[in-house]
Length: 271
Image (cartoon, rainbow, N blue to C red):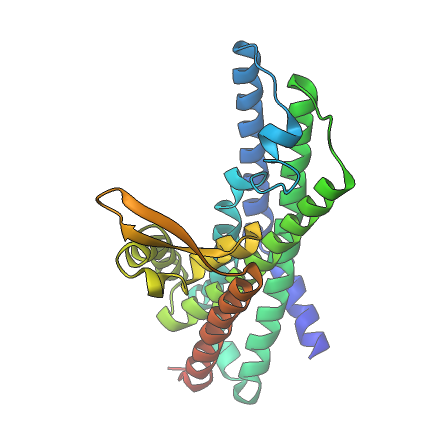
């Protein structure tokens, strides 16, 4: 099993999307900071790293602008890794390993989880460094403390965990639809259309869905639901369950996707 996981690591590292997608995200970060620097300088403003960027000692908002990219990146890497074998015909070869199909799927899920989590933590750390540089150039970084950096480290770690879980969701979804493009498009539609609708009209169900729980896990906050008349403007945001529970729920979704995908994968005919 260890050798199989190692082989999957090597295959994953050799794929262009594993290298170029994170580099693209890093490029977007640099471009965003460059634009922010230009705007701040042109308006003769200043930035306080602790209060303006980190959102205070808890660092609740420091990764806000890029958190949408991390689960998307992880899902795409996971889905495309499975989809590449489908597109090239490699899947038929893998399906001849009937006694080892589930071992192969498990090795792939483990390697993807680690790679997606590590890449996300590297990118999150890089973004924090860019924000620190922005504040140092345009304002102040006074007030930083061990508590602040500890909270930032926890935020980075939680973001990596959430991304790793989404890579597993990408694998499971691609196995089910047998097409990586379809699973990615479906994921984007679900994220921006389906789950917001469920969260609005069925808030008691929406609190258990993946995106809300991923956000709660990444940000270290309780998962939240809407209570009241949304369209009338009379509603409250109610805390429901903790970030730890949100992480367990998100993990449950990934495990479910892998179990269902594993059943399909183990029974899929070569023809």
